[in-house]
Amino acid sequence: MAVNNPYGVVILPQRPQTAEPLKPWWGIIVNNGASGDTLEHHQLVRMSNVEYVDTIISYPAGQPQNTCTRGSDAVTSNLGERAFFAFQASANIGITRALEGTTSDRDMHSATRRCSASNTIGCPCPAGTCSCYVQKLAYTPYSEKVLATVWWSNQAGSKIMVLDATTIQEGTTSQIAPSHFTCVSHASINGPQGICVQQHFDRDGDKISDLIEASNLESLIDLENGSTFHLNPAAFDLVDSHATAGGLWNGIKLPEEGIGYRHFYGTDDDLRNGDNFGTLRMVQILESVGRDWNLLPGLTVNVPRPRISIGDISGQNGQTCWIENGQQICHHPTGRESDIRYVRKDGSEGQYDFDDEDTTNPPYINYAQAETEKLVKLFCKAGVKQIWVDLSGRSQLQNLSITGCNIGLWDGHNHHFHVQLFE
Image (cartoon, rainbow, N blue to C red; front, side, top):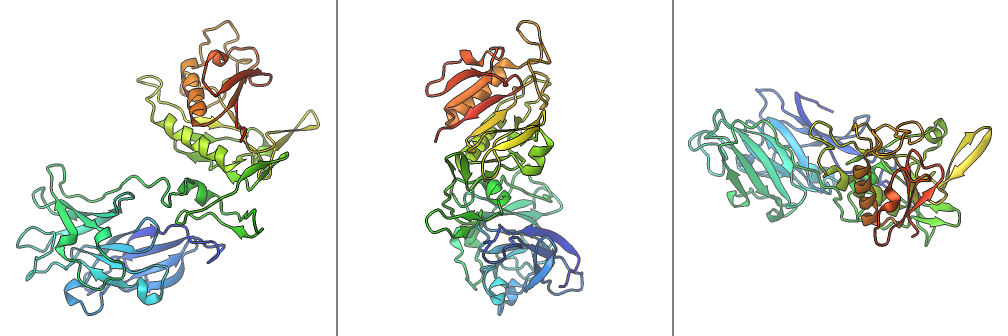
């Protein structure tokens, strides 16, 4: 494996577990090379121990006008079918065929025309020059566009190159004509060095987020034929994850952190055994509420909104247990229940306990009742049917009237409320 002045690394989407069960991720090392090089090749590797897989040749065969030199960055399409490379010296973009294909498929097969002193047709550099750099790339998750920063020494020559990947047939070996891309200039674009876009939440559209799929590498079981399968962010998955009579089938792990939420362990037993598994439906609801919660403004101008703090959900096969006064106690048997901390006024993500704080009559100093009510309403909106709160009624949440969502009082909920599904 040749690493020559590496300028970038891109991680490919998770590969099918059936291909390489213990090595689901590949990566690409982008080589910039040295000034005397006529071309630089790149390396396809297995992560995370960086095992060599293949060399990606950055010279479209039989197309000298498309020679690609001084690699600077790379991106892949949403599902990892092909890769796009940026090149500084030649100021162009190169494209591979299928990365999961043969060795020759992974090589550069097409590119926009390189810039040179004698040719600036199809070149993003200012007219009459060839000294701009295509620096960094981003792949938009929604419109299949490749965005490239074109660096120039002043604002007048700086721009963003927008390549429409949908118009370039996979496997093409012809030069990518100027009709496939546009260049955008603006007073705010001046010597751009980097670019990024918001990542797609669910690339394959199966309503299971990329984060959940990447966090659940363990095999699941097909209920119909008993075969095993693995979640894959780059392929549509049909998953049967449900409550059984006192247990959980194909428990799905909630990632420790996500948009608008965090998971915490209440006991050492929880940490050892894992208490963040639920039915797919429950995990999806927790993620959904986290995203909605994250869109709300801070608690005050000076106090940012804390993340939702999620405690016990269930063990991988149902229920979570701990030892108390020498006895084992278990709850949440089917992965359809979760414990959520009350919101504090100080913005802390720590525990609020009605028994330990604000023991006088309401209003309670540290309890953010209005914010906790917002959180409860989000859970009800997402599909939760039952919520249990502090037995003494101090949370005031039992006074909420929400169609289709019952809120009741239950002992032991002085420091969290309990959300529950029935399906």
